[in-house]
Image (tube, rainbow, N blue to C red; front, side, top):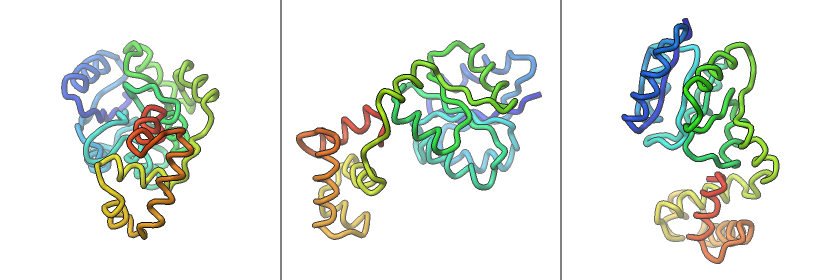
Length: 201
């Protein structure tokens, strides 16, 4: 029996997925969580074979939870499931060690099949997203530029970003200016929007 942990913040979606996966004869959903920061404790408590992670969750994103899982649970299989078929998300997920990346509108049978395949050592990627990610290329943003945009996305001004990241005002201005230029945006709000749409944040 495949032991599966399901992390999804929308209760209705989480319960529907759990019900559908529990119908499979060889899959048992052993735990469900609604927040990214609950994933590590649930993995420690339940010892699943596979973790199904939504990308956008409160507390901790699915991609950040994946990064934290990798060192202590190197053999754990992780399937990223998302509403947002963004090439940048796919690229970041694969770089962080995800075993599969699927969009939520995939049929339940395809999801169950992906769970089985990752346990056999395969990597499973939505083919449409794989093609889009290759066409899109890597994010042009450095880690620092991405971090500055993420703090800006929360509504912080230059002073707030500088304080949050322990940087000088001039350094923050430079990072923002470069990020705006790289995204082809006219201002920071547009840079945040573009970077989010491409899955770079």
